Each structure stands twice: as C-alpha cells, then as structure tokens.
Length: 150
Image (cartoon, rainbow, N blue to C red):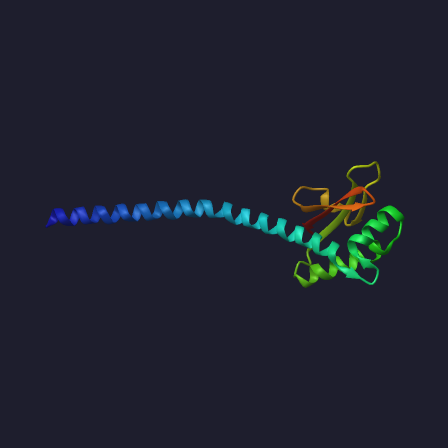
C-alpha cells in the first residue's frame, strides 16, 4: 500500500510538472502571436484607410481625382479637404492619437514628391504605411499613407 501511494504521488508530481511546462511554453509564444496580430491589424487598417480615402466622393469630386489634379494641374481641392476627412475618420474610429501623412511620389517619371499632413510621422521608426498606384495620362503616382501614434 505504501508503494502504491509513492507511485501515485510521483505520477501526480510529473503531471503537474508537465502542465507547468506547457503553460510556460504557451505563455512565451502567445506574446509573439499578439504582436503579429497587432502588426497585421495596423497594416490592414492603414491600407483600408488609404483605399477608402481615395474612393470617397466630395463636393469637389473623388479624392483620388483631386489628388491627381493637385499633383499634375496645381488645383488645391485635395489640400483643402484631406485634413478634415482624415481627422473625421480617425475620430470616428476612436483613433484620435494618430498622426498621419500622405505622400505622392512619381513612379515612372521625373517629378517632385508632395506631402500632406504631419511630416514628422516618418522621422522615427514605428510608423506603419500603405501604398497604392494612381495613373494619370500614362504616368503613375505612388501614393503612400503613413500613420503613427502621437
């Protein structure tokens, strides 16, 4: 009887040790998954924000058309509307502590890079970004949206 009790105590101790090891290993790896999910969410959020911005219609037209008109023709409707739009969207989604910057850069021709928003967003690492291409008369503009917490 005494031998059976000792064996049972050792089996219980071994099962406890196995559970503790499993718990420690799962805790160690769950932090990586959480960070990966946060990164993927931020990438998806930034990309969707850029695409929805460019597809939004205003009284001046669609934002994508306004951006192209401002870059190539010098019109200013994009500059006048984009700040209020971004502030409204970030407030509506509860992200009031985000700073943003939009950049339009020539992809296949010589030209200048234009920016709108807070240019300090890209000064330090830790921002996330989304990119897309807009075409205008056979020329391509790479549009980038950068976001970071303030």
